[in-house]
Amino acid sequence: MMLIKDFYKIQATRNVDANTIHVTILLNKNHDVFNGHFPGNPITPGVCMIQTIKEITQDHVERNLFLQGISNVKFTALINPHINPELVLELSIIEENNTVKVKNITKFTNGTIALKCNGTFITNTELV
Image (cartoon, rainbow, N blue to C red; front, side, top):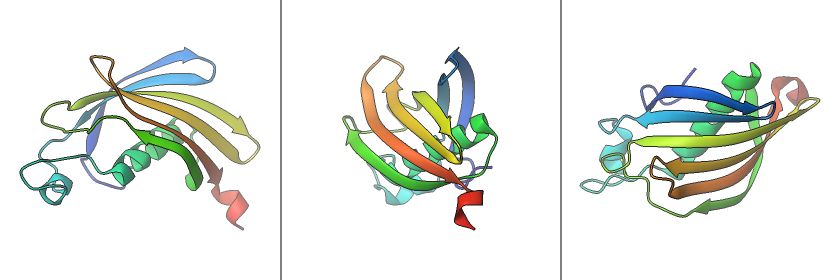
C-alpha cells in the first residue's frame, strides 16, 4: 500500500538474482507533493524516495516493514519528474531474522545515478 497515494506507478519488476531486483517506476509529475517542492521547479523530496524504497522492499519481502536506520545517503542528481519521470531502482535485499537490509541505487533511464543509500528495516514483530 502506498503511503503517498498515486505518487508513483510500478512499470516493471525484474529479478536479477536471489537477492537483487530492478524496479522501474514512473513518477506522477502532476502529484500535489510537487506543488510545494518546489513551485515552478519540482524536485522529488528525499523522504518520498526513501518511502518508495521501503514500499517496494516491503512488497518484495511480503512483510510490513519499519525503517530502523538509513546510511550512506547520497543524492547525486535532482529528480525532476518533468525531466526524468521514469526511474530504475536497483535493490539488493538481504533478510536476516526480523531485519531486512537494502542497498539501493536509483538511476534515470539514461544510466545517471540519482540516489544511493543503505537502509535497515525491521518487521513489526520486533516492536513488541
